[in-house]
Length: 137
Image: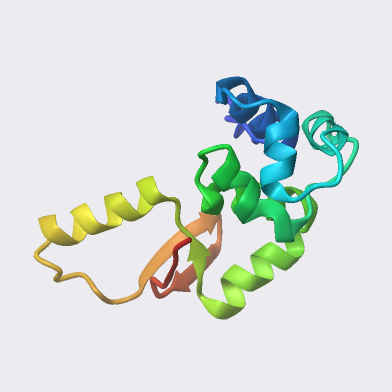
């Protein structure tokens, strides 16, 4: 039996991808985000400094990225226990625009008939029930 490993996106690797796709300079991005120096972008990209959570939305906007995705990646990397507690205790998860689009299409396809909580087995032997609540940015 072959063990599957999940590929984990880090903030640094995601920022490298987003910066490579952007036509903006790090100076332009840092100004849009309100950072005092473009060197901070380099530090986030290299993983030598953590991206402040209060800058996620503005950085995502400057990079034309989905803020929910960047938030989920950052919180999963920087504060995985806190992120898990937020999702579990509030029954909330941040959906990207693409995920929200899938949820809406699913609701259309099922004539909006499946509105009750769904049980999911995430870890063998553990069943998690979460009602669907969505945070959009």
